[in-house]
Every structure is written in structure tokens, then in C-alpha cells.
Image 1 (cartoon, rainbow, N blue to C red):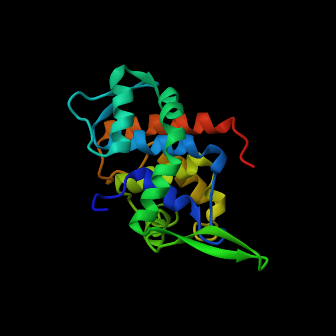
Image 2: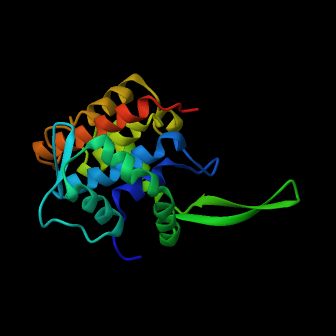
Length: 218
């Protein structure tokens, strides 16, 4: 694949847990991935948000199929953010996972269980470490984030999965505080994003928080 990974691909890769071969936060995953798709449209100036509603920016359709599908849905009429998340999110996990495998970011391998049964498992392809280091630098070291890294950190926080990243990202009070700042769009004075972009993405992330709060995370 030649196109750069989408924000949702990067988020799914981060949520992959190499030690267990599973995806963290499966119960809330479709809302979180939906949030990543809509947030990327906002970062690219393809959608805008007014209060709880999101609308498409005319003549700004993306070329990526997954992003285009979400943009087309919003382009029909302005919609409530949670409505958009519920509409686009459930279809994302499979296609995004296939993209990660096609890129080599994740690998499918066969393992024998109990010496009898073969099963397919996922393994880390290597790129995840760089993404995790970028997010860790913002959450732990207080670095000024690039917009995409800020949104990744905010969505990880919104998903409720950050405790599972300990010890790589220590689950401490300063980290929790910084993550909540990212959720609110407080990325730092030098962060390379306009205030309106931060406001729109914060609106999207806040709706992810609200949507996932009522779903059991066990």
C-alpha cells in the first residue's frame, strides 16, 4: 500500500497488545475508531462541528475509501456526532485490520495450541513502537504534540484503555491529567493546529467519551 495510514489505522495499531495478541477495548472499539475517522476529516478541514452536530465541508471529499464513506454520510445532512459514530464505527474494524496486515504493521501467523489445534494469531510488525513512543512523549514527558498525535492520545484516553499501556505509559496522576487535557483540545500553545480544529476534534472526542461511558468495559 502506498497511501499513508489513516488516523484510525494508527489508533487500531496502538490498541493492539503485542503480549496477548488482542485488541484493547473491544467493547467500545467501534465508537473509538469512528471517532478517529471523523477526527481525521476534521483535521483535514473536510468536516466542521457546530455544537453536537457535524457537517461536511463542500467540495472537500477525501480520496480514501473509508474516509469518503464517512464524509458522504455527513454530506447528506448535518448529523449529531454520536449518530455519525454509531453509523460509521461498526464497519471499521475488519477493513482497518486488513489494511494493517497488508502494510505489514501486523502479521498473521499460525500457532499450535496444546499440541493439537492450529489457530491464527496477530503479531506486531514493528511500526507500533514508534507510534507509542510519540504518544508517550506527549503524555509522560509533556512534549508539544503534532495534531495527529494529540488526537491519538485523546482517543486512547476516551476509550478507557490507557491503564492497559502501563508500564510503557505509566498510569499516574500526571499522565491522567495530561490525557484529559488532550481530550479537551488543550494541546499546548505551540501545537501546530488552529484553535477551531482543536475545538472540533475536542467535540468529537467528548462524544466518544459520552458514548463509551455507558458500555461495560469488561
